[in-house]
Length: 148
Image (cartoon, rainbow, N blue to C red; front, side, top):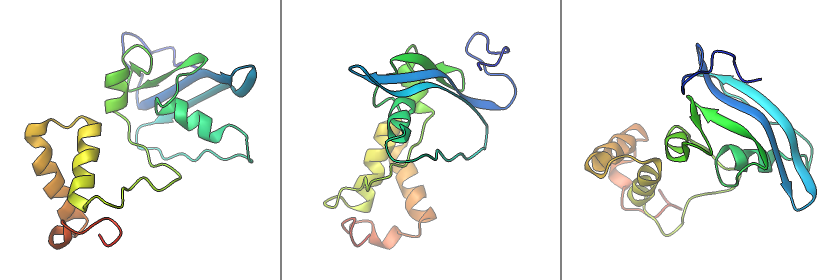
């Protein structure tokens, strides 16, 4: 399924992500088997399936939380296994579970997310302030997450 124009770290045209022949097994149990997908720039996708069909495991592989048993993931030409840091810097992910820390303030949570995303420390404060403004939360920056 890998686009034939994928050469030297560049994806052809408007393809932003390629999931190629991804398989994941835990011990002898195959959880994801030979999954393929191409996602175009700006496209939004949903992964649907019944209980225990491998959706969460697939997301864990795509986000780098676990490595695939076989296959490869590329985002903007960066390989999950060969250029992991570059790959992860291109990725944003919203989990199905609450990922907020109740004892953090809104500012602390945005600061943590910026650091995890790899925003340089010299630019982090500016980014945090911009997002607080976008969310309309400038006055509540020191409130804990449950009230933020």
